[in-house]
Length: 202
Image 1 (cartoon, one colour):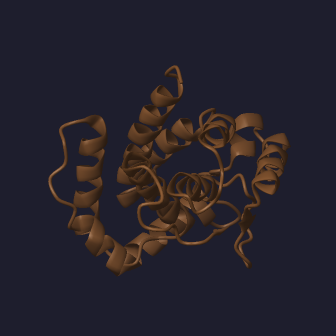
Image 2 (cartoon, helix red, strand yellow):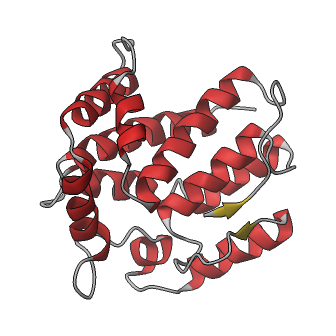
């Protein structure tokens, strides 16, 4: 969903690159259902550490191994699109105010403009979509967008920390979720880590 350049190899700290890959994966899974190639790659993930994040990654790999692309199209439709609306509305404005297109969206657009980041052409979803915000975080961490570390932390603190964990928790327990239950669990575990890290003294 974001307009960005591909990061150069070695352009970011290895830990930041790992974080960027997780944000990018979550963003990709939230903006469209995974295709067969992505499912195959997820299913092939190797052994994971016995941490909550590692267990969530293992759960996603297992869910990908049994998933069918056609069924995932229907699942994604039911969760995020529906007839009129999907089961979930993964937008910052909705989670923070109860309505769409409210002040949180304006704040996102303000920061995106300051950072020189724009949606890709043809994308209709407003910029406070959880998938879009995860993609922005991936770009910031990977060095696709030029921004100092404090700007990266500020973007997370303003636009993801207040509500992303709740949105992923809702996805994990959504009635229409099967594969996406594992995506929600991964998001919950990852946002908890990011939130705890953001609270540490600089």
